[in-house]
Amino acid sequence: MAVAPNMRSSWPRVWAGIAGAAGAAVLLLVLVFGLHRDPGAIPSPLIGRQAPEFVLPLFDGGTLATPALRGRVVVVNFWASWCVPACYEEAPHLQRIWDRYRDRGLTVVGVNIQDQDRLARDFIARFGLTFPNGVDRLGTISIDYGVYGVPETFLVDRKGRIVHKYAGAVTEEMLVSEIEPLLADADGASP
Image (cartoon, rainbow, N blue to C red):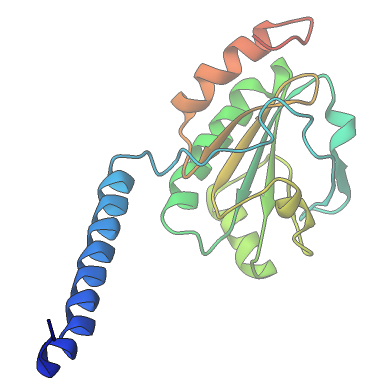
């Protein structure tokens, strides 16, 4: 049985329509799945592993070497002055965590990335940040931590292991629920 010439020319359009509909269905499924996921739940392969060590040039002069922080609980926060509104929302919370826990064995470290020096210093002054803040000029610290964007915050236990990662703005309440058990653990073993 012979197929009419005009029917042969319509098959590519039929297949193109089927492929387009299938592609649209896949895209719709991805979007629906994505809308039901927590955008702050970006997994990190570093959880449970030793935190990458670094030496951070500080804005107020000097450097901070993370090996010197062993035995303390450490909050490492990656931020930038252009990160609006998330970095602006979380800055006061980080300062309150620093004020509340620094005498109990916690250090907050701010790591500024992809920013202009003057704007970063203005940000620190605007929020009255007194915890150590420095700049990752070459991007090696953020690469070692697998930072996707700002803000991202890592919680490191007394033994230097990353125990939690937050993507997006953190609040004091979020951090307290994780920090309290780590500080209560006097021998340095994670809960």
